[in-house]
Amino acid sequence: MAGLLTEQTRARIHEAIHHYPESRSAAKAALRLAQEQLGWLSPEAVAEVAVEMDLDPNALYQLSTFYDMFYNQPVGRYVLGVCDNLSCCLRGSDRLVEHLQARLGIKPGETTPDGVFTLKTVDCLASCGTAPVMMVNEEYHERLTLEAVDRLLDELRARTKA
Ligand code: FES
Image (tube, rainbow, N blue to C red; front, top):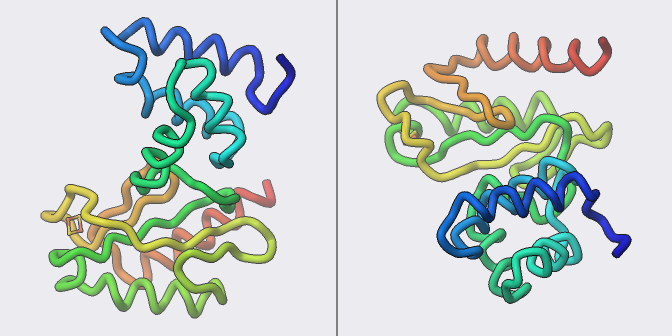
């Protein structure tokens, strides 16, 4: 069946299923594989994953909306997820968010017009001892200062031009 998911992604989803005693236990792994291919998870994409896993598409879509790591709308090349829970707030994450908003010209939940950055605030990243913390895609950046954020943005922008 032609669809959004490639044959390779479908094969990887089936491989993931085999690592678990039942199909639904592999739901997050399968969604991650679909997102890896497509960049984000539309309802149609989630429905295709559900068919592969023999799961209810609505339940799978709801699962995808529960976790910060899944994107239910298109995102930029770099997703900046600033933790706004207590430890990070106490160590200035609100100032980081304000700074990022000013530098990028977007608010949390938005993407820069050039498609490079999406800004989000996220729940505790389980690295409270190194607050304030921000994830850039899958990578942690800890003990952040405004200067470190500036350096990071410059580096990421340079990468998009390389
Ligand atoms: S409060 Fe930010 S990592 Fe836990």
